[in-house]
Length: 346
Image (tube, rainbow, N blue to C red; front, top):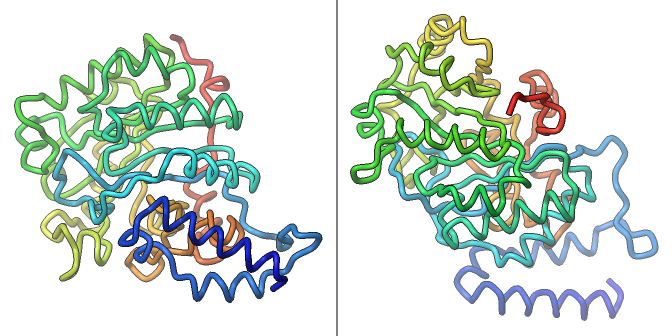
């Protein structure tokens, strides 16, 4: 490594230490690996060479916070840290992803409306649509913290808002852990659907099929709400997240078989916007970026983090992502994800 590269590396290390504090710094960085990788990196005029046939991160799910105000028993991205990236650092990472070919970013959590009461999220949404000019900017939320003022400030920059709803029976939602005080999750869902229509944001619903809702028929309610997509997931177990001795959740009581999942899909076959995703389709076909901007590899039934894209770049981090691009395409990962192309009747 050239002398100026070494100086640059040391300066970057000190800046990271300043930004994150000592404890988060030690959790986040393996600088021995980072240093060796910098030495091995092929460089041409100081620019990293992109490998032929390299994965293009067209659609990235950025889980920028793990904190949540709900306690969903099957959650597979749990509150293991309280860290949120300084927003300028997050923007740098998003710019790197755009330069690498990202067309769609999905902000998730945890609950993405928690940091700064939704303003952190709003600033990222604005940045991605207005400055990065991404075709699609989307959010997945439990909906409990969303206010109409957020739509007034940021709705024009958002393409799709997905609200998680696992049941249209409030007692079932509370049993799952999707509840907060006296708030009615279903009534809140309907209110947000109306705001989406008013502020021209495409509305989507996500449902996790589990032992608590497996016998419920949601056909009538889903068709009445008329989301552009109803994404239906099979409950997924991941070691260290919602399964195993080191997990913050134990989701085994929520787990359903493949046959049970197929029966649920058959019951709802009349819903035209149904998009089913079994565990086989889901586990490795998402590019998941965590709060430290590390890709999470789920190939071995757990979430193994790559190095941060802020340290090694997108291409090298993607090599550790365990991403199944063929399954991503097969499950319909690329679709009309920009509201400009949806021809919706607002």
